[in-house]
Length: 354
Image (cartoon, rainbow, N blue to C red; front, top):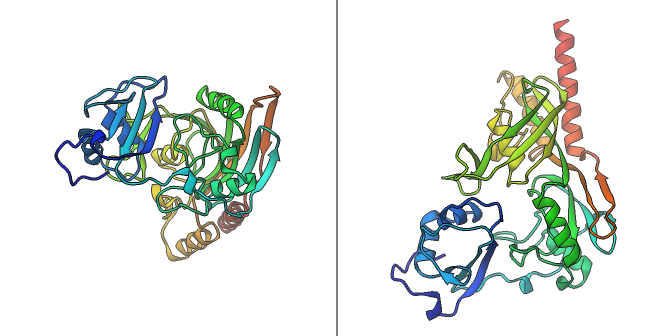
């Protein structure tokens, strides 16, 4: 989005290209369109969004609007810009190894390793899971695109962060995409994550019910908000699996699926995920900072050089057979190594106090 032109030029006066398309959720509350797009678009300021609206580059249901327009459920929002976008036709297949745990004519269950980006985007136009899927399918047009998604996300019904490992379900046709999308929308998909967090929650089980939206200053981060107009409803249920005083292994069940949801919610509880650099988990948050302990923590960070979060299981109704499908995965080696190191440390500390 360019800010150079202050005069209204109107998208009809020059050749423009569709960059973004959003279908507003049927349960979306009525908020200003510039606020809605601010939450949706990473690394783009509210001023730039307002400028794009003013210049006629943002259309709602094929009509130009003003920045104070309040979106309605099922509005179709399109952002057209003069420059050429990275189209789906430019996304090529790449021979990227895929860890496929299950596949039939409708769906595929893929185990994504930490470090692999799910779909192309700014700074990651190649080397993603989607590039591997296109190569595997041999024809990029074989994979459907979910309504409201950009064309660079074929087959994707949901996603997980680059440095989170775990299971993803891929839709291989339009029927599967529609069926699975509805299950995600209705919150009937079971998703279980395992995480190592700093410290030990006061309660062994709990529910975090806090609105999540884009951070007002850091566009890459998300943040908790009290006002529903500032964020989207997000619910995380957690259970402590193994408490170790300094850290805990927890199980989280998502009721909603917001960006960085578990990472933001646990940081909000002051128990950030271990080695989560974005939300404060990459420094000592529990225990003293004397040199030997600090060295131990840094060595554990080296063993686990990313946030300790793993999408462990998925459960849903098969789009064609109607059968309940359940998939589970093992904890990755780096999380297992970090847990073993913490167990040894805690056991050693206990033996010294006896």
